[in-house]
Length: 229
Image (cartoon, rainbow, N blue to C red; front, side, top):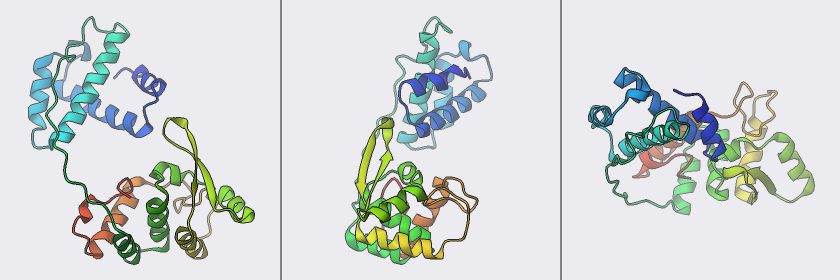
């Protein structure tokens, strides 16, 4: 895969998660066709789509869109004369009914969380609307400054490098304080840093939230994640 593609996506303000996902699917496609990427044609894409037919329409559409994006880039930099997938169609995605969490659901989720840290994370995500990456970036320095000021607000850098300020309500603040009282001593600069001081791993937190939702008996527990909150 052409390394300049990542720079191109960064330049078009794609999120790090989108870039990571697209690169993963492009590499899978290129491995599948087992030939030079510039020689790929519509038959290759059709065969690849058949190989992932067991996935949901949404997943298939995402992978095809990633491949189309990459070949659009290759055409733009004149690595290929024509984009063979310009007119490629993606399967229709039916919108599933979305469940909306009630205050009672959030309370049950927190009550069944396995640790003070998970309780605090659920409280913060559900009450502020922060994305996981935004919440993970909050530092201890920011939190301490917030406490000293007496105004429970924190500023984060959101999608598209836009700055926004959110309010930490009393519920979330209380769970953060409980978490910090039980927190293992480490040198992490982040409020919700991992045990080794790094940024949190989304997958681990998602598993913890799903486990709490299942224990709480929430019927749609499998749908609940950091992003859902």
